[in-house]
Amino acid sequence: MLPAILDLASLKSAYASGLSPLDLVEEVIIRRNASDDPAIFITATPDDMLRDAAKALMARAPDPNSLPLWGIPFAVKDNVDVAGLPTTAACPAFAYHPDMDATVVARLNAAGALVIGKTNLDQFATGLNGTRSPHGAPRSVFDTDYVSGGSSSGSAVAVASGLASFALGTDTAGSGRVPAAFNNLVGIKPTPGLVPNVGVVPACRSVDVVTIFAATVGDGVAIRKVMEGYDAADPFSRKAAPASLPASGLRIGVLDGAEREFFGNRHVEALYDAAIERARVLGATIVPFDYAPFRQAAELLYNGPWVAERLAAVKDFLATNAGDFDPTVRTIIEGAKAYDAVAAFEGRYKLEALRQKTREEWEKADILMLPTSPTTYTVEEMKADSIVKNGHFGRYTNFVNLLDCAAIAVPAGFDADHHLPAGVTLIGPAFTDDALAPFADAMHRTLNAGMGKDRVAVIPKASRVPQADDGSVPIVVVGAHLSGMPLNHELTSSGGYRLKTCRTAGDYRLFALSGTVPPKPGLVREPSFSGKGVEVEVWAVSPEAFGRFVQKIPAPLGIGKVSLDDGTAVSGFLCEAHAVVDALDITDFGGWRNYVRAGAKTTAS
Image (tube, rainbow, N blue to C red; front, top):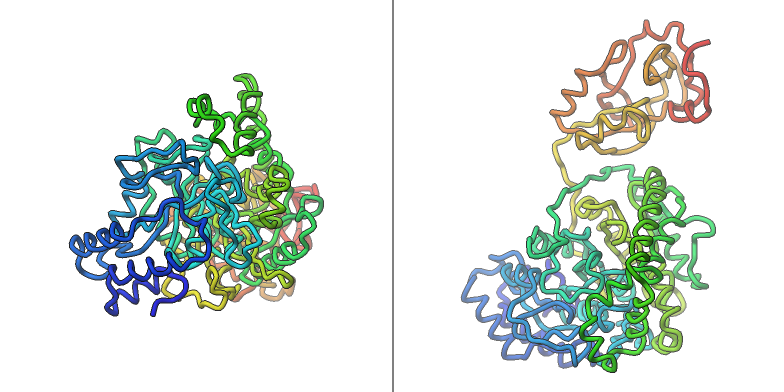
């Protein structure tokens, strides 16, 4: 008996116990036929074609689980090519029959996965709500009055209703995240360029990303790793440059003040606040930040020249088939005619100016945690005011690809009145895709809200995402090497990353050393002293970088064991006692950063 939700761990266990891919396919066919949502698929893989694919897999790789995704069923958004099935982008007149799989589909097939069908979408991937399709509107698996989210509507519903283990979406403005939130799923939105777009009908080619809907973070990450990799046929493909995040003490930026907008939905706001508290319990440092420059960047995607990219993708078809477009989609795409080349450059200049402003906010936080969508609507509410209400869904998603970020959307629980799910998205700088995953996984597991439509399902231990051990060496810094300080580049330029901000044990004093350039403090342990500890940061560097770092430290500073307030001892900066005899004692400031912020003298008076 297969579980309601076909997560990877459960299926692999079933295969190890004797289930065959052909057995699985028969179950998928039964479930697909029994589905009460007729708008999920545009083209379902024909039953016999699906059976033949399972038989071919068993002939190619007869041993159970001998391929990474052996016998795993998946659905594909119908703007992504699958050989043997038409690609329509939810516009029947646009349909064509590809000779080849999209690169991502080919890689998934090679890993043993089985395509069960092409899923519905907002036409030409233009929308976040799932109602802009001639094939109908897929519905939330929890209440059929409500939208499923879009544009990857059918993909999310296929996974959340237990028809597929995972599904591919695409994400320009949030289409790989909003449907995840509305269906109690995980949405993996890779860094732009990490996953190739060859064989994908473009929306905004420069910022499009192929995404994954999955039951767990671990499943989504495993699937992304199969899909990713440079493809020279995609002009926007990039070779990965993995970036790290602190393993503990993660600083998470959250909404504050006037930028908290939920359009009257107090339930989603309460779930967002609860997610913030769960993050705090997991050890994160919660940091309010100014969302304004991110919001202003987000507004450029639909209210700036980037909409012209949507016209560029379909201009020839629009010129001959304007009547075949969904009216709202046509209105949006034809709006691109208001922009010329000058406007495109002006938009780019504005985006880069906003990017500079966002860098100031990134100094405060390692990652951001935002509501995936601030609210939801019924299908009828959405159809009555589609453009405005669709814009509400994108308030916290539209900037992410424009600003070159990675993101993972995870469930945030259910509201008490309507029993509808909401979600939060963890957003990190480019190529933090792997680094985001452990914390996202922990956030999902602490929620206890099940997977997809099964609210009581237990997330399998086998899909847990562990914190990576990269062999780095921890080092305590106390002064000019702190984040944002003059010598911090000596850590970051060699690949170092901050593990946490904490305090020393209470028997340390801090002094302002005279004559140092840039100004530096001296940390000295005094066993007879009883204080509150000094604020420090623990960074991780490679063993080679640690060795080079130690050689450059000038006297009277050196490296020794620093006792921290959690009882651990970590190598870090200490000062020889003779050097602080006449130095200014600044211990009462609590740390070097506070002392510098206070504008205090950096030499003894």
